[in-house]
Length: 210
Image (tube, rainbow, N blue to C red; front, side, top):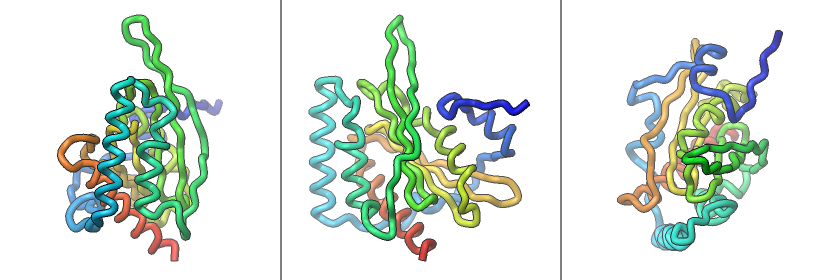
């Protein structure tokens, strides 16, 4: 009997058992988020300063629900060139998630944006961003494992608007993945780093498509 697991219920253990997925600790496996990254222009830095100000304003009202893509993700994707050819953006799916704490149920949504079948962006939306970006890691990996373009490295970004985690999946003898450290909006220059990494991944994926 074929067992079906809802995408938002899948765990890393499920993926390890079903696909022999393995996480690697090899630092050289995912160099794309490290090292020599694109330099941001003055205009790009000013735009990110405005994004931080917008999020700070929203957080004062405990309202991040339904605004994450508009306030944070859309500017990042625009600045990194992901809205322009050769890229296309499509919303593949949307699932509901919830968490219960002290008898309060918090509901959110994970939206999956696919860019050229090689770059996935998962946006976790919820009030006060209660859901950690880590919630979406098993799900984005499950979509990446089913990708048609398995001869290229695949990349993912999971964010709840304030936290960001990048992923890389490579099909070798067995599928292997690695993750970046978690970047936090408002901490050091993390938002700048997120944009730099997105620009680098856009460059890599764009070249592989040609």
